[in-house]
Length: 358
Image (spheres, rainbow, N blue to C red):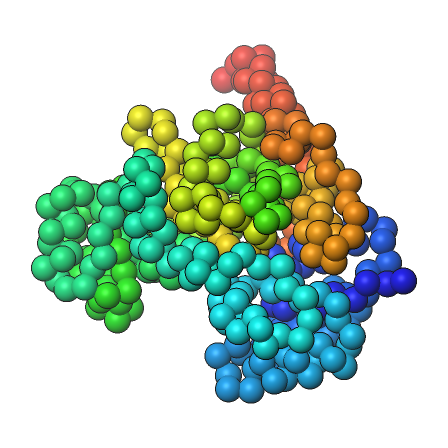
């Protein structure tokens, strides 16, 4: 029997990778796509496509429930943060299965400053941060954390509103432009290196987790902060320090995690990864990387959500070989390779340089 799953944000890259991951299994899923953008909807790779209003529309939930009943969906998977936030708050009204973390956990993780406060209270190593309510707060932020600070919105994905700057005037103009007083934070700038830790939990038990280091952001030269939220290349890692800090970051917010917790960490000057946010209730955009490499977390998620048996890897944390490389970009098929092949091409170029005399 085909299991029927409704996927929202179905035309976006994260949902496309969720659908592609499930297709890799060969299981007979019937996938129903919904999107609030009529153009994005046409990109959905689902068996059905349906337009829904934005999740902030008054009739969003009634129309979503009507679609769930019409299509017989047994599970709802939402990838966009805005929808996850609405569905989490109104989960008791949704007429099908959801597999989400607790309400309060979602609320905390959707707000980067609230997450920071939890980590600080638990004495995790995090970048010093303060909420910017007034221009005076901004000046104090520069005095405490400067000369260069990191300004960003408390809520939002893909580096929303982020700007590294050593100029008070620039930071003030940036916040003014975004009408962001009271919604932005200022923090000390960390280093450029980042790592992520994607995990699935079931009632407090870790089902599976995998680390991945980002090598560069796609289109980084087109964002003021250099952060676009679009990983250009990622490599699998297995680092006990990252594993331990990511687990601490999760449990500092939720003592009994349940659902998807995807942790972003940035390295400080001492080489220690600091948690900066948890993408809650959803996978990283590039989770197809893991599925293509043999760890299909989308499939594990669905089987757990439906209450079905699923084979978990014998090694629950970082089951994939370190050094696997995923390279992606706009209008390009992703490439799965490894670090050795990249290094070999660099060596070949050096040999060619030595052999060709100017």
